[in-house]
Length: 77
Image (tube, rainbow, N blue to C red; front, side):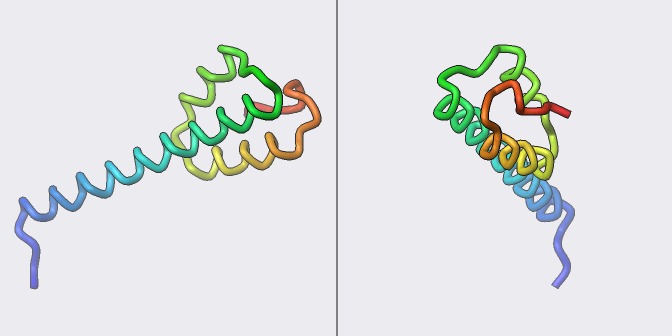
């Protein structure tokens, strides 16, 4: 059965909303882990993390945060 145009746009909106929710949750996870491990997150780092728009980049950053011995070892590429 074919979707109507309205159904298509509703589905597209849901998909976009889910993606945005996933990005927000991952950003919050990364920031929380940095805070737990190093007791503070520099404002510049918070700003850069909030600008990340790809889940894969956040996943890679999360891995670097987990293995870093100090906050200065966390590379923000």
